[in-house]
Image (cartoon, rainbow, N blue to C red; front, side):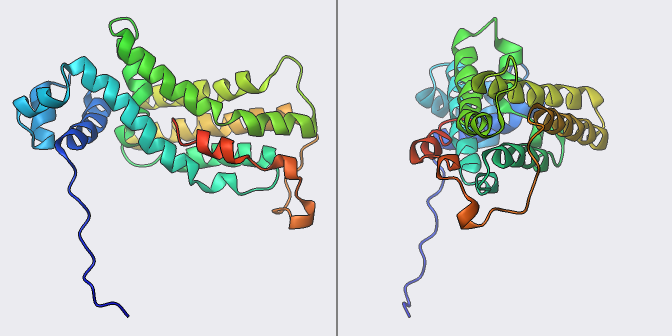
Length: 239
């Protein structure tokens, strides 16, 4: 057995500390109410250090949206909802997973990209576009499973995979808005979870021939139902 002492993980650099501070403060206070001085204090970085890494607060906002996509992309890529053999079961498990993430105070379970874009969609096209990449990029990771579910259970009238994938995000983001309006943390969590539950029921209603079963045995699995390696890679690109 090796007697080497494990090395300590490298400390976060100043840029990463600023980005992590931005994720927290913007979700707590909003973009406009978060100052550069507050970001520097939270990150333990001087103002000179801030402007070494970001030419402006707007540049920080763009980078924060991209940082959010990278962090959440890793979370979703490794999440257990990819495990079911049935593609529709994976879509429904995704919604369940999103509901499980609704915990703690409102800023801890709401979306950085959604918070940002609601505030600056007119005033900062650069931040808006970074948020769009995050939200639409994450929606795109659901498209293959939805398309496979349509192949297996039939395509509902007027529905396509891309539209339904985007609709999931519209409902979940709407739930976050309702949670913020609810105010009190317990009520906020309840309304956000309620929204996710209605989304799951809606998706189930689109596929009436689907009947949940125990996880499929290997001989029950349809090879075409499994996400491709390319699709798994895409799921790491944004959320």
